[in-house]
Image: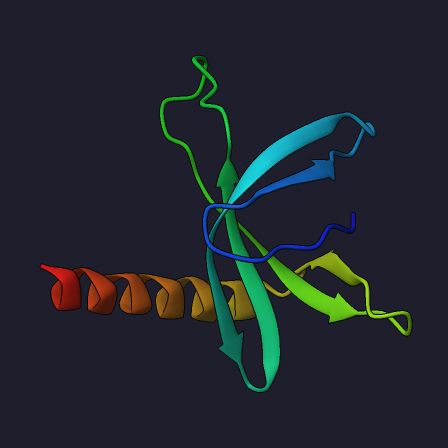
Length: 97
């Protein structure tokens, strides 16, 4: 699961658990405790899904400077990252609005 991104709205192709390619849109990038994370949403809505969620992945830079995305396994950390994401998005909305 590696792909470079430049800006919000970029499309990123990741492989699911069955190695099927899935397209995601970069919604937000955030830092937490000196680590970088990305918040992604499916690029295409699934008509069978009532709600579309987001995926938060840890950004790890390899020795050759490629960005790799790792699943965040810690539920408590995921909760903190999601809360920070929501707070930052609300701040952006308040600033723009």
